[in-house]
Image (cartoon, rainbow, N blue to C red):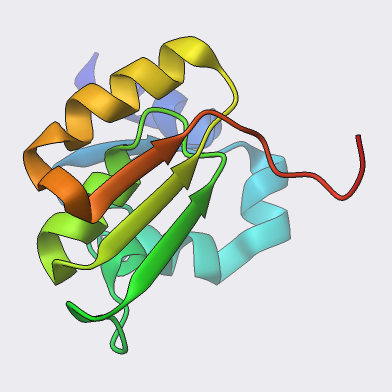
Length: 118
């Protein structure tokens, strides 16, 4: 049964790498090919998305569409940079502010969306 489950998992496009599960459809596999797999092999979601060689404590990062501020918090903690988050959804603004409160004056959450026109 374990062999059958493994075959079904492979047929559905789901794979398990480095102890973490990620899923892709056959379409995604065809569109993104090796880059999709390389991203996950190198733990892109946890490492590469935070790897910015030029950021430091004097940097200012602007996160437009910040959602709940998780990425910004990780960047702020890693680089001790100044953060400006823009998020128009009130619930997400409050969650971002709560999450980033540990960064003090280094983080500002602005309750606005950014657009080219109204």
